[in-house]
Image (cartoon, rainbow, N blue to C red; front, side, top):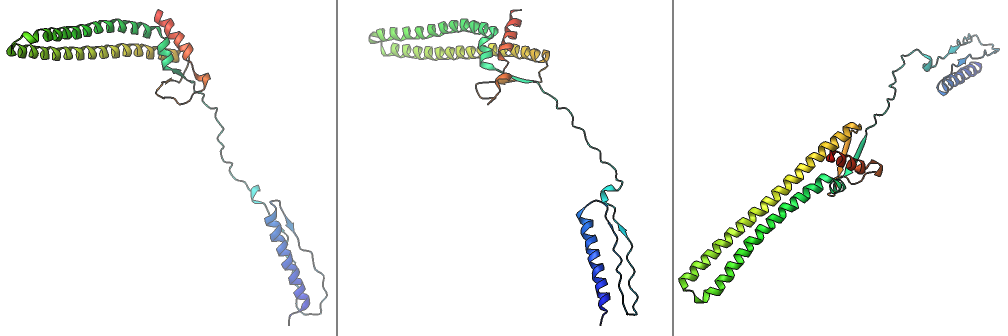
Length: 228
C-alpha cells in the first residue's frame, strides 16, 4: 500500500504542473513558476522527491526574427476623363452647318433632275393616250415599247441620282467628322485629358456625371478654330 504522504506530494506536484501549463498558454508574458517546498514529517524510509527547478518561459514573440518588408501605399494616379454629346456638338458646329447647306444645294439640283425625268415620262404617256385611238395596232405596239424603255431609263437615272446623293452626303459627313476628331484630339492633348468619350444617341454611354460633360467648351473651341 502506497504511503499517504507520498500521495499528497505527488498530487501537489501534479497541480503545480497544471498551473504552469495554464499560465504558459494564457499569457505571452514571461512566467516564473517555482513550486513551494513541502515540509513533511514521515516515518517512512522512502527518500522525499527533490523540488523541481524553477522554469522560466520566454514568450515566442520576444525572439529575434526578421521584420517583413511592408509595401508603402502609392498615391493613386488621377486620370483626366470627360465626354461630349455628339448630337449637340455636330448641330452647333459651324463646319457641319456649312456642309449641310452645301449638300442641300446639291440635293435641290438632284430633285430637279428627278422631276424632269418624271415629267418627261408622264408627258409621253399622256401623248400616247391621246393618239392611241387613231393609231394602228403596229404603231401602238411600237409606242408602248418606247414608253417601257423610257420608263426603265428614267428608273435607272433616278437610282443613279439617289446613289450620288447618298455618296455625297456620306462624303461630307466623313469630312466634317474627320475634322472634328482631329480638333477634339488637339483639345484633349492641350488640356491633359487621358480620354474623351463620345456620347451618341445610340447609347454608347449609358450614364455620365454632368461635371464630366465638356461639350460646351469643346464646341466653342471647334467653332473658333473653324473660323480661322
